[in-house]
Length: 576
Image (cartoon, rainbow, N blue to C red; front, side, top):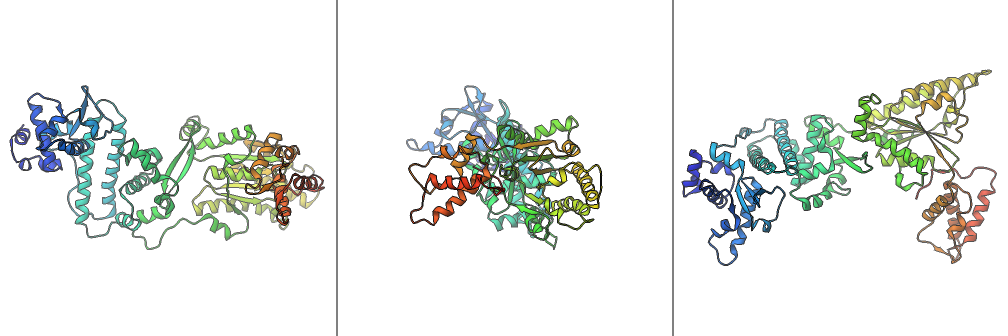
């Protein structure tokens, strides 16, 4: 007990043997000495008000020393006691005024053994960035353990105290090593370049730790990241801004996220470091900068695919409830718990992404392509579109080769860009139609061969493939079996048409007093047709001296549309 006796007997607390390990000021050490003296006298709990009144002060000036007591709690040397129970939640300074405190397990161990048995790295220069990262990853692990400990019960505050102490000591040791390190540490240089504050640095290091461990661990989760940088509930609310759109980490392209629909219907965010930033940190000595090739730039260099840019998600599209339910089922494949079940049942292998081969069928203008694009935006995935009618314009004998080329080039683009885009096959009727049983010409032979190759490629396809067609009745049964989702897009009913008119009509325009959306909704139009009618009416009204929309203007365009003998309503889809 020599360390304990030495600490409670010496008048000059700075000369006690354990003082260097306390990492606190002489005034703070004096408080610990007073609490320890009470403890050995059998007074386990010392009232905070008694500690404060030991300070020589006038009036209520002793209240200014509450911050000193609070800091000792934050360091983990003392714990707050209320009604005989240890309180574990974070508290304000005034909340501890009328409570008591006791030595933490960490302080008692230090008093007994003279050491916290914290395995700290030696004070020597870092030889490379990996040594530095190992220390920082230990810091992140301590922060994570502390976050978990805060959610515990009776004795978790004792664990929390030890963790806080170790965190202080380890953080100090990292600072000491950095001061004597001559070689630049790439991560530290990056922090200075981007002017990241301490909390942003901790988020970055947590995500970097995940990359090095090669896992899909908890540290990618938004709530977990906020937990490890937050002191209390108020701090958590404030720190959410660091991971919201528009924050420095996201706006400067340092990190990004995927939105995942969980099994309870909520959406969570899983964060990761951008590829070029990651390569810069992991391979600091590489002369050639390794960057992720942008998919849209790669697409510009070829003439098969078009890279679509969705502007809406599934919440913006008018969908039949059953269609929305089916799409939600597809999206839920990315939920970790759902994937774990499917893997355990032998339904899915190691691939964690969505596997879905989908047919969207229905009349033109009912929103097939728009829904495909909105699904891509909901999943935060790019979407590559191919117009299947292009195959028919290619040379006879080459078409079979070009069918394979669609899928081969899609895989190549995905690999180069390191992304998993959705493949959209528009106007896929000629591929999906029934094969010709009695072949009588070279063209018919080619048609069957193309379909066989197409069937083979769909069978092997991994990821999300969406084929759109106007006619499902003509689809070959062999193809029908290969698609695990067949979704019909019907013309909207009157209620849906009213919604479409309401949301598509220009908001800032002036309308005649007789104008009625209910009147327009009576006409059986697709979303594409409604969009076209609104645009044509707007062009007509814009050239008038008095640009006022009237019901007659719209009815005139509706009559033209419904009286057409050809389909002029093809559209990318419709949205609200």
